Image 1 (cartoon, rainbow, N blue to C red):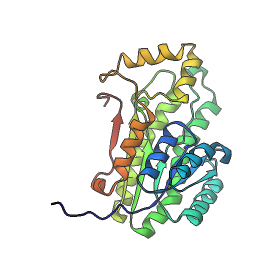
Image 2: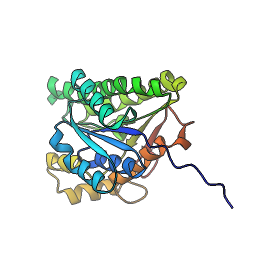
Image 3: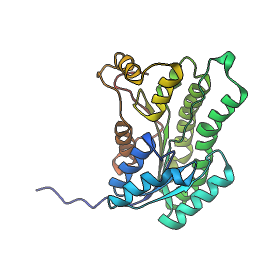
Length: 257
């Protein structure tokens, strides 16, 4: 006979950019794991489908519209989620945008917008949520990096931001570890989402051909799905992963770093 285990502790999680795609999958997975979920996207109406799916499945979620690059909006969003769901001690910094172009064609606004959402957004969200984590003496932060951090043609802004998130992750792991807060990053490879579909459209390639070309370079022989990333996030957030911090996990169907 095995000794009965206590049920997992229900906590409040925030997932940014969770109106669709990878963020929505992570939000749904954390809800299935028993957590309450604050669903943040740029506009509150963009969160409706994710919130409805979680609540209809017996979970508890609220949707909040916020620009994660706006300090005031972030503070307001985190405070609202804390009021409605309880102190948020889990944060997944997933919000992201693309403004791809070759360096000589890339505008100042292309650079600034990507840095604003990915890096400034992760900084502002982490700063706001860590106050709750430190008070509760428990926390998890998961940052979404990318295999593009290793370099990718036409993505100087995105690659720099995703590489920056890895350094950000390792530094927060050092600073927050004493408060029982772990900080890790996930670097997805090719994942079939609306964002990758938009990339295919931008380069003028049919999406099926775009996927086929990508899969040819993936050792496991398939494209990734949002659920693959959600599973990795779920692992980092578990109590069993409390000795894992400052790590970057490449979820790419093969070795990438």
